[in-house]
Length: 203
Image 1 (tube, one colour):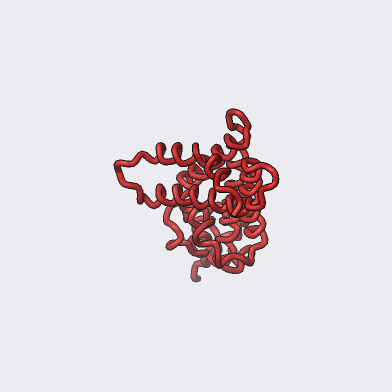
Image 2 (spheres, rainbow, N blue to C red; image 1 turned 90 degrees about the vertical axis):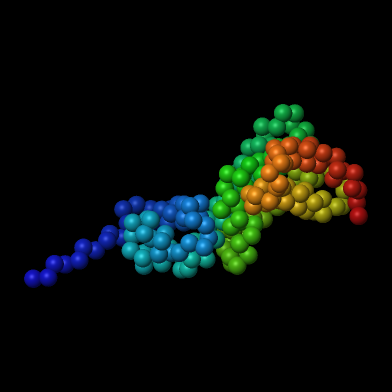
């Protein structure tokens, strides 16, 4: 009598959360190129068809991972601002800039997902809300630095973002010359940033 093949159980716990964790680990270990639902299922210990019960496509799972990345990102920047020495708007913005770069360095694969590869996933309401929350956070911090009556808050927020994002990208892409100390680049660029955006004036 032929031996019956043992069926792999659906899952022993919260499959949704387990798949998100498995997917996050794949991104950290192997990058986006190796990301598949089948590999997520294998790491989660379920059949290759099981993820479809929660994520209709690989894009849906990636969208959730990117959204959670933004949630964590916003929380870490808030915490850094709240821990700033003087709690002045300038110090809070500088602390947020440092936390931005720190997040990118600590989570390069997730960071790339959030800021370079998330465009195809715009249908995700969670991702839209989370990414918008990050932008609002930046606008509010910049508005506090500029003071009342400035109509150019969003433009200056984009200026801050471009600078900090550029520094983070250069570091994680290893584009800085070996002779350059990333810590010095971060410190010198951010220390003068609040005064620089105030001095730009409305355009």
